[in-house]
Amino acid sequence: MANSDNPGSGTVGPTCAEIIVVRHGETVWNVDGRIQGHIDVELNDVGREQAAVVADRLSREFKVSAVYSSDLKRASETAEKIAASCGIAEVIKDPDLRERHLGDLQGLVLREAAKVSDAAYRAFKSHRTNQNIPVCQTDLFFQTF
Image 1 (cartoon, rainbow, N blue to C red):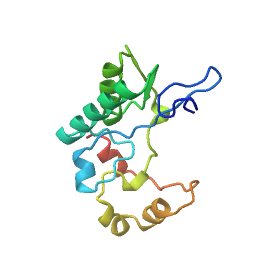
Image 2 (cartoon, helix red, strand yellow):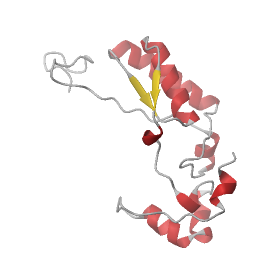
Image 3 (cartoon, rainbow, N blue to C red):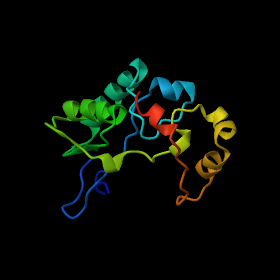
Image 4 (cartoon, rainbow, N blue to C red):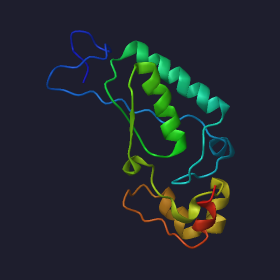
């Protein structure tokens, strides 16, 4: 929560913590509509620029004291730019912060996913958060990217 005396100041009271969540910048797979999941895809040039812009804004508008990221390149590169702009020496990388593993859908273009794995696609599109997305051996192929 922000300090109520100065909303948006980026300061919090002594008993509060403010958490800012930032999504990684754009990747080539985002542009293609390709499902990433745990596949380690780097930022593209637009994503690097997006990361720089958000890093600059955060450094001006908030007092950032720590930066956490998943260990995937797209997230950690975004986080590294934020940390550097905010004077944070180290990004704390944790694989538990990765986005959801998307099983058989990883590496597929969304519009083709239903054709390739109907069960996985239905689980993915479900609004139920406890859906397991099926994984078969073809998933290992996509892990090499």
